[in-house]
Image (cartoon, rainbow, N blue to C red; front, side):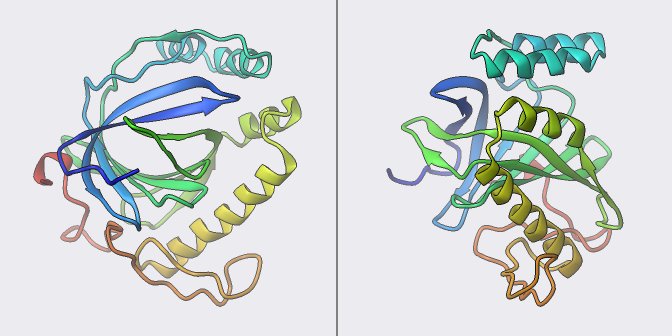
Length: 226
């Protein structure tokens, strides 16, 4: 399939065993062989599993655990919701087991977020992937980071939603993400040896947004991009 033009809408679908688990409408900023860069504003269409939306509305994470049970039995329903609170810029290299996301509020860059997920499968309307639950939450200035939802990740592994081979791919992607942070230089370091990213050779690929190193250098907000 061909590339999307800047300004077009691309739908990011999370697909599990042939069924749509989630959707998000994105506005394409750039689409090359290196990465798809897209943005999402509050109000964009983003259907999620009904138990996920219930967890958000009630502030009750237990409903998210129920949602994974529904996923394991392939019995879930989607509820139409809208993207809320933040503006998002997403960078997704096609073969990577993660995407890099920057979240903005009216005050500026709120945080970076590495979402571990399947490599891209292009569709006529956008691309399919699948969220593998565990994430990396990173401070705007890259000064600190923490793993997010590791308890849920352990749960989906127990349920068989994430296989051993997929876990190994996530483990490698974690190492790559940490190497990127340690390098503080672009989005695509190439590991040259070592399980924990030692001996990395960082280098930016075309279309890769630069990580902010101080208050004057940051990703532009979505409305500032073409």
